[in-house]
Length: 238
Image (cartoon, rainbow, N blue to C red; front, side):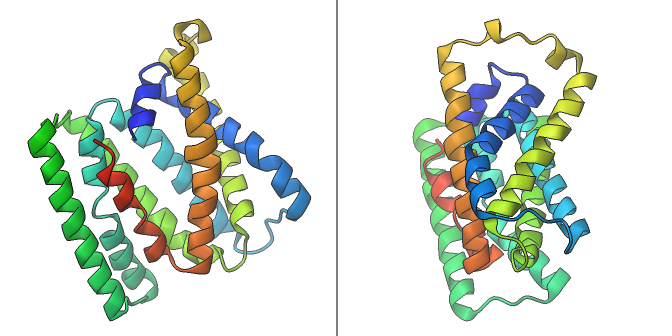
């Protein structure tokens, strides 16, 4: 989140999201074209819905994080695993094991204790209500994305899912670019070298690599287990 917040200070959010998706798409394309047969035949609606949730999460988080602090944004994401567990149960009657419940409880407590310690030592800027609302909306999109990914991962490979994620996000971002005056007025001359480095880092490491590993975890474990990776990110955010 820290790198995203820094980078969107130099790029309009819509431009940032479209370019981020384009970089990630370029990185994974050689691998997917070599190893994976792309297909829309099975559960097409579910795949499109997952892609839409992914794109909306990126867009509204980029907009929200501009108007709140990094620590506040990560704190809003702390309940992700809990909401994944609740939504999985309500939608598909998926139940957590006793060990998973214990693990969730301990990680929530640990994340809150260490985050509160960071706030005490460094202080916190709470941001604007609009920014926090957008980040919270992004969290719920991310939660549904994880839950539904758990179902389509039985059909599609991790590479296939993220390939379509990036394609749909780029298309949506490009379409919104044409409608957003702030984005249309943007020029690359407004960005310094660190902005381009931030964009490259986010596109490669925080997108292509991170989301492949995330989908791999979903496929080989569960959406709930995958959602737990948010906590190490939260602890180093501030």
